[in-house]
Length: 176
Image (cartoon, rainbow, N blue to C red; front, side):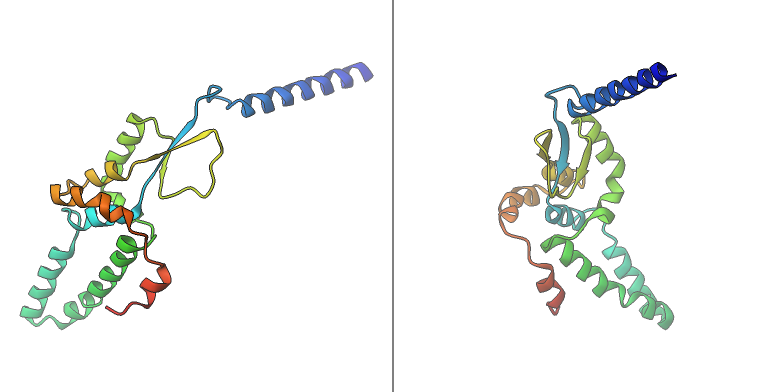
């Protein structure tokens, strides 16, 4: 019985050591091959989305004007607050560091294909920490292109990206 206990203990230790060694070598990630993560600047994404077919502003404006012309006060009252809320949200996303997951939603399938094609394990706005086993790839320009932006917008993005994001507290205190 004592031998069986000792044998099982040795098996457990060897197995645990093998598991730890495999994980430290990257496990299913071959040694030396880095995990690729796409990162992006949210601000150009917001700008590209704003100029895209996914932006509902014109549709909402037509709906509002139609309700106003028809004297539909309930619809006007319902739609009225949408415009300043929409503008405020886009200011946070376009000038600050605010998530753009809602803006990425319409191109989600294209993002998944892009990630597979570029062998990216994930795409995220930023990483607070990465180990030396991780390679960060800036995919901002690639994501922007999913919105079919104008050539003028594409040309202006490098200069725009040089500007620092506005602090969220400043955006929150800004009066439109």
